[in-house]
Length: 311
Image 1 (cartoon, rainbow, N blue to C red):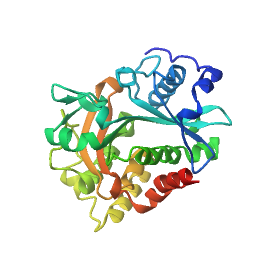
Image 2: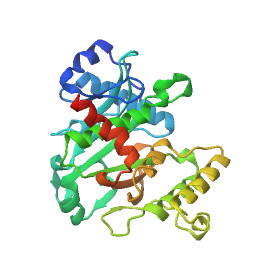
Image 3: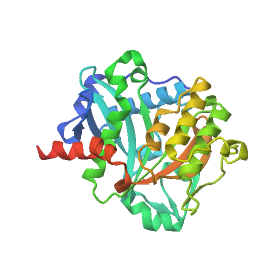
Image 4: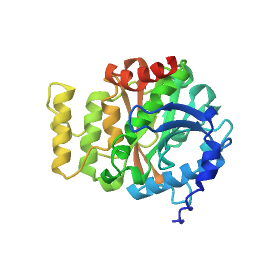
């Protein structure tokens, strides 16, 4: 396990956060959202890599390297980095990396994206969906913005990130789908994990074979014992059961998992794989159509950006 690199100089980062890189202001907490990459903002990229490793390692995952920057951050064209910037504290609140499907290179029938080492992509997905898809990964919230003591800025950190994703669907109108993954850590516990995966299987599992894990995670998520737990008549009924059981174990549903669950009733879940190169975390692939995002979320994260642009 390597020692994480020191904090990057603020002046070096500020010099790279130019007006051309500014995407929008957040709806809450008065933060700013920028889009950068390893080529036009190398110092900011190193700070992103530092914070990603710090956040993921603290949760039980991570690369084990001094800085979480990989080939996908540096390839041609590189994945781009969406970051939430706190202009008062001059700190990165959190971020996502993304790549447009049109920019994804196909090598020997395999898309050059980070999830390809865990999932198989069908020819139908590659030809029909990928060109119109935004691939998302490496989502993180900086450790100092995860604690309740950080106040309003921490409270809205994930909401700020969704503001950024909403804006991306506007500036790239050809994008119709979002593809990404949600992560659970081995420390979460097998039964709690199986309950969440069982809930996702019941309400979102895709049986068409568009995307499948190379080696599905061994779990009891599809067992009769777990299936019998979710006996509600509606999604909301089952969600209440899940929430109650997870809380009884002294845990919470991971925030990003919670966020995706409530984003679209037609979201697809493609199964779960173990990411052996990232602390053996458990990655569940998800896919959704932007036009089918619930109206409340569209208004909050997409239409609010359109309104900003029209001013």
